Amino acid sequence: MRVSLTLAALCALGGAAIAQPAPPAPPTPAAQANALANSAAAHYKKGERLEALQDMRSAYAVDPRPDFIYGIARLEAELNDCDGAIAHYKRYITDSPGTQGAVDAQAGIAACEAKLGITHEAAPDVKPDVTPDVKPTIVRQPPPPPPRAKPFYTDPLGDGLAVGGLAGGVAGLVLYLGARSDIDKSETAATLQAHLDLVDKAEQKRTYAVVAGAVGGALVVGAVVRWATRSKGERATVALVPTGDGWSFAALGRF
Image (cartoon, rainbow, N blue to C red):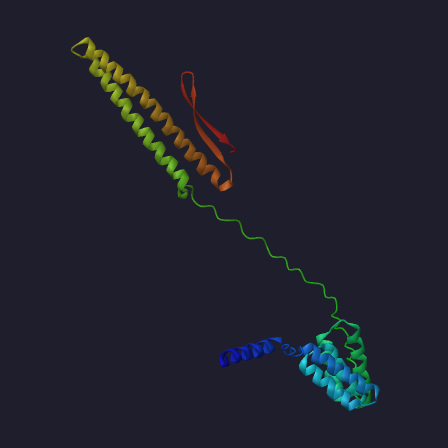
């Protein structure tokens, strides 16, 4: 029986503890600052400037709003603390540029500076430096001398064409002599087949000799054209053109 009464009492106490309301939450910094600002306004209406200034400083310490800085500057100016007012007006202009409050703060600074006898010196009138119009002197330089013409045999392209032409001419001469030799041998060939083979071989060598000689001659002429025109800046084209009965040499350019 005693145990049952004890349990019933504990349950009743627990229910009472649960039924108690939770403690109220602490006010936010914004709410605290608003309460202090309202207190400052009430002091101001009563003409209590110093108490209002203290409340505004406390409000700014809790919630640093630009409006509180402006209120502090106004109260300091009315309490003749112009140095502090000017400093807080400037801070407000920095925090809220381009606003109507910034314009009013600038006017408050001017009023405080007038009380303190602060004057701003005007910037000196600096006259522009007028430089007399001096016409530039034009100095005409003589034209450079024309480049000296180098000897014709120092041109690599012309020399290469000449060497190739000589090589082609030598090759053509060797082939031509070989063809003459084969013709001579065909006259004393032992059989008809050997005679025909030597004649055919001679004809081939003669054809190769003509081609080699023509190419060599074209290269030599090209070398001469190159040597003759390189100092004049002229361009020449050398070509070996096939014709109906052989090959012909063509050189295009101005001489």
